[in-house]
Image (tube, rainbow, N blue to C red; front, top):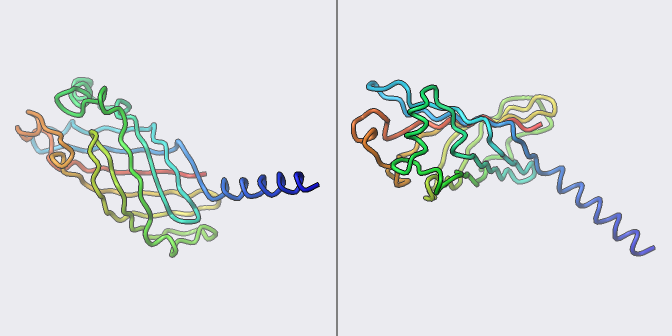
Amino acid sequence: MKKTILILALALSSATMFAQKKITTSGVINFNATTSLDPLPKADNKTVVAALDTKTGAIAFEVIMKSFSFANPMMQDHFNSSSWLDTDKFPTSTFKGNITNFSTVNLKKDGTYPADVRGDLTIHGVTKSVTTKGTIVVSGKIIAANAAFTVQVADYGITGQAIDAGKVTKEPKITVAIEFK
């Protein structure tokens, strides 16, 4: 009898823990490094894996770098090459952080809530602290998280002729849109 109660208690606590974490592959990251000299260095990545702890506001995502899709195949080759992002050596980028004002987000009430996000972004094997603002949109059982920020490519050890020549911005804009169901 004691074993049955213990197993039932463990099962209920596991179910509660799973209910606190939302995991999805329904995310998109846009990379925009365009300049006045070249409007082509922009890409989308639709293979984002993300997790949100609905109890604490902890948020994380991981993206496979080779999955960024550029309109120009040559730009995609340059992006992945060893002289720029070296995606063979650094196949993923990650973000792990928190929505610092998560207590103001009511996941039980439809609406749009401002989100202050702080965490660690790893690109090209280098981890840097990132702080940005975003939004959390609650609509029924769907939670959408959106944010936009810029990074300094030099901070992540990313260099190259295209950057030096002004064909790729030194501060690309990163836009993240994730939907948790």
